[in-house]
Image (cartoon, rainbow, N blue to C red; front, side):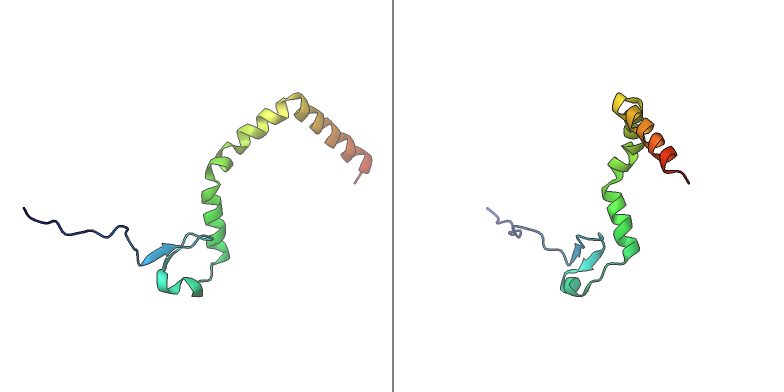
Length: 84
């Protein structure tokens, strides 16, 4: 009976994703990493992709509801009374 080589119980990567921007960073350089504002924004939009994709539909549904129609009427009324 031949023995199979033992595998480690978990895989250890040399790179880890940054929790704030998603960039792949060498594990030894995690503490020195600084996120770029653009990358952080792109990563956040990626995380919210499903919500962003359904926003227009949700807004349209709300504006067609009784509450949404009232909110529109009230906003228009306030806009007219405050003037330019």
